[in-house]
Image (tube, rainbow, N blue to C red):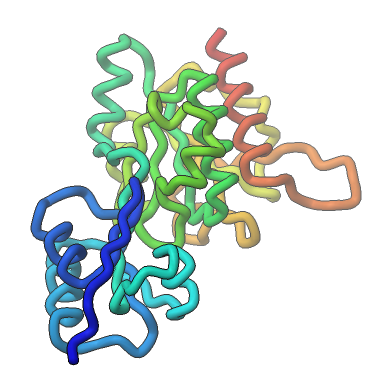
Length: 251
C-alpha cells in the first residue's frame, strides 16, 4: 500500500514529494533541496534532476534532521527550503549605489557559515549604509529564518546577492572600479586606507578566514590590531569594526 503524503508547510519549508515537485515547477525561488540519506529513485530522482537543472543547491541530510525540520510530518525523504528574502544580483547592488549617487560599499562574506554571524553582519551593514552583501551558493549560511531573526529586521532593507564563485565576482567588481579589501590576520593596519573610493570588504570563514584564491584577488589585505591572547575576532564583530571605519572615513 503506498505511503500517503503528509504535506508540511511554513514560510520557509515545504515537504512531501508531490508538494516539493510542484514548488520546483512553480518557479518560486528555492534556497535548497534537502534529501534524506538513502532515498533515491522514482519521483525523488525527478525532483533532484529538476533542481539540478535549475542550479538549486541539493543537500543530503539525516532522516532525523529532516523529521525535525518538517515537524515530524511524513516528508517522504524530501523537502525544499525557501529564502526568508529574495536574492538580488550584484548588478542590482551596484545600481543601488548609483541611484543614491554614492560610491559602492559592499560586504563579501566568503563562506560565513554561522547564520547568527550572517544575520549580525546584515544588521550592522544596514546601519552603516552598505549597498549590498555578496555570499556564495555553497559552504555558506543562506537567508533562512535564523538569519532573518539575527538581522532584527535589517534583512528587509538589505540587498543580498548569492553567487557561484566569489573569486570571479571579485574580478567583476574590479572591472566596475571597486577596490577590494580582504580582512585577514597578516594584513596592513585597517585604518591606513582611504575608503571614500568604491569599496568591497571581504569577511572570511569563522575558522579558516578568507580562502587563498580570494585573498590573492584582493587589492589589499587589512587587519585589526589584536592585543589579547587570542588571535582572531568573531566574524560579525570584525565586520562591524571594519564597516564603521569605512563610515568614519567617508564622513
